[in-house]
Image (cartoon, rainbow, N blue to C red):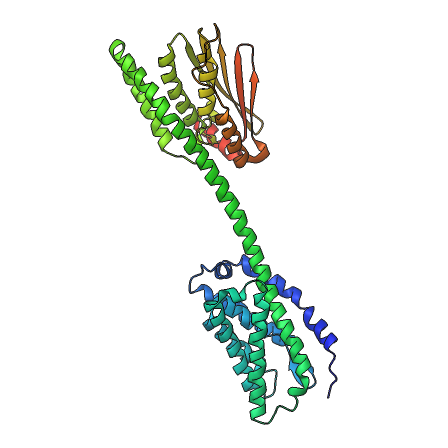
Length: 417
């Protein structure tokens, strides 16, 4: 009889564990298996769990070698993994397939009990995974795998004992105990690595969704801020204009309708031309409120840049700031200029206000929240590739926005122009 060296057996089996970590990484990259790990898979995804389990079971059986006359292997790793991912039916199929494959490697006396033990592994593990999923999470995976493998050893041992062929099986019990620990460690490693990768992906997705939600909340805050206060002032302007200039009043109503239609459309992104139109509708109403002599609006937008996609309501806080804290703070004439140009692959948008005359007391104090919110939106969307800067000029202030532009958008704009 061969001597048993537990240390050698442990090294021989443990060196294969790295392959299990690789298999776990492959599993999370394959959509059906990832679905099973996330618990959202469809029935047909269980087939992938069976195939993976059969492959690992066959691989584990081929790694086996003889100790004390007994063939020691780690095929049960594949059977347990199939059961954890696909349930008891998947575990039973993987156990049946793995047991049949292994039966070809052992003598006929042991084969029936090995097959029965393999199916038992799959069924037990699948039932536990479905009814007590917590038993296959964290450190519990190791303990649960140990318990199931202990039942495996009992099934084979009792079967061989019943037919009088346990003479070589029982003396090799130290090797079986080592195999039990290695199988449990292999299953634990697979589950831990797979769920760690999935967890990281879920965290990354949650971060993106949180940023998108924050961006949406910022837009909603801007919309809510505009709706009551601005609408009240706009309606007063329209009412005051109806008698003295009905045609102008109709234009203002059209501008107001366009303004709020754009606000309510909730676009994820918008062509720069649409943003400029929206800003002009806003400025038209402000011009009617302040007086034509107080506010002049100029726009310089090259046709080739009109199709470039930008964040929605990008210009709204800039033109509002220019009117409220620039032209509106002086009693003389003023101008709000909108300009756009391209510097290599960077879109540069400028909103500049100039005004003359005496300073007027502020109607309301600015908090800078709108511009700070816009900065955060740009940072979340573009990172360090975008910026928003404010710089004083001789008679006002200039806001400069820089955004990266895709070549495809420029080509689309040139073709449209």
